[in-house]
Length: 124
Image 1 (cartoon, rainbow, N blue to C red):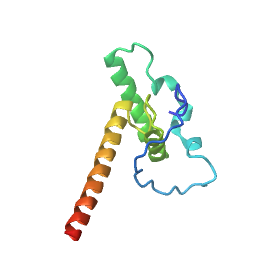
Image 2 (image 1 turned 135 degrees about the vertical axis):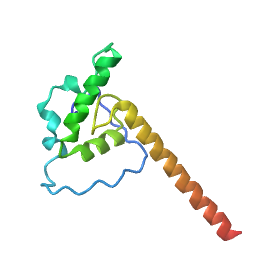
Image 3 (image 1 turned 180 degrees about the vertical axis):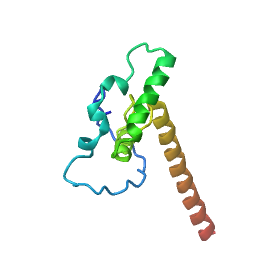
Image 4 (image 1 turned 135 degrees about the horizontal axis):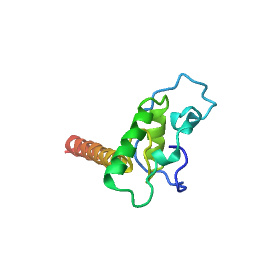
């Protein structure tokens, strides 16, 4: 979804996955082509005290909208780089995005450790 209930300006220090180049006009912001612009924000953001079954159903409906969106990858990367703490963005819930971010951090740390081990072995 495009208008979160907050404003987040910080950027996570996590390497972004390669985002495929779009075959569209690069001067047009990606979000102008988002399918969710035509849907109600309530589908992408939870109302307060939403029951679990209703939340799961709403999130699945939002993910179906995302699945047919031509800018889903750009939306997901935006949500991961901000990071967006609420709502369904790029087909992922906030909890799913936290998992992706944790995996990226872990992979980055493993790469750093591997490089450091390689340098120590080469020097020794």
